[in-house]
Length: 398
Image (cartoon, helix red, strand yellow):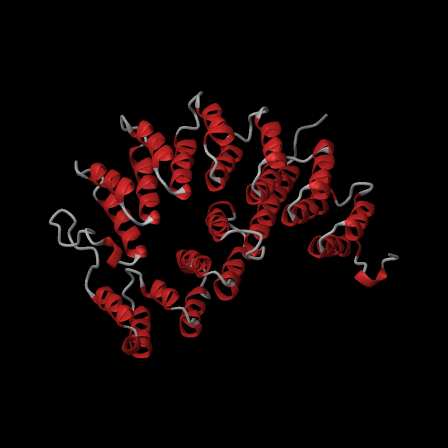
């Protein structure tokens, strides 16, 4: 017996990072029918945290910013690129070109909606003003606001209250919530005002943001936990309820009651698939070392009524747990019998990536390339066969 060498340790770290990269790429580059915009936005944010040193990350963000159909996902990719601009000199020229090529006013406004007042940003403002101001009064009004020294007037003095919040673009409302929470944390009225926004704001994203900021800054404040549980029950939006439970999972994971309580919510007390999606992913991420969690999550992947929940959890499962012979058999069973084509496809991809060298994998892939009822799943199996053998599609005997 001998200890683990530095080379072996570095190899293990490389394999773990490779697995993270593969998981994130699968979630981001899946067609829109397979993953929701929210799921891909979450994956972009996860890439910022978990994929820190991989140069492929910047290329992936650029691809999404340029080719992604969903506007919100493109916005998130551009925002992530902007955060990396000081470390990569190619990013600002790319963003400038996206500004010139982009047709969506929302994307253009996002690019100029920065506190940065460099000559480059000012030039972008004049371009959009010249091109679109005359034909769109709403855009002109927002541009005029952005040229003011500060869109966020004094909150305490009431110069920029959000009493008529529906007239203010949601992105500005969210930014305002963040500004108040982070710059005025010590003021006695801030927590009460944020709770009022979390409970009564018309915009779902404003309520979500307020809940997230309260949990981030006031998790240990007396009454915060009970209030978060209340929002998880009472809000009419699945997204907002899911955010409340998600924050409980993140902020109180060390408490002995948290895991069992969240499992009961996921199983019995909330029928919203978005809520279950948030809950199950947080359980997978925060209780990865609990031996009782793995079989429970497998059961949820097998039996949850919503295919998106099963699909997302399957990917999280593959990215977080070391695979073994039992997992190999279980993944093949999912690839053969799940009713959702995206679940079957992703199970095939995971089997090929994690068990490509196992005896029987290649023959099993050839079987799936013939027997699956969906052309997209059969195509995925053929692609994995090609990756493992370099065999062209037309070389198969079938």
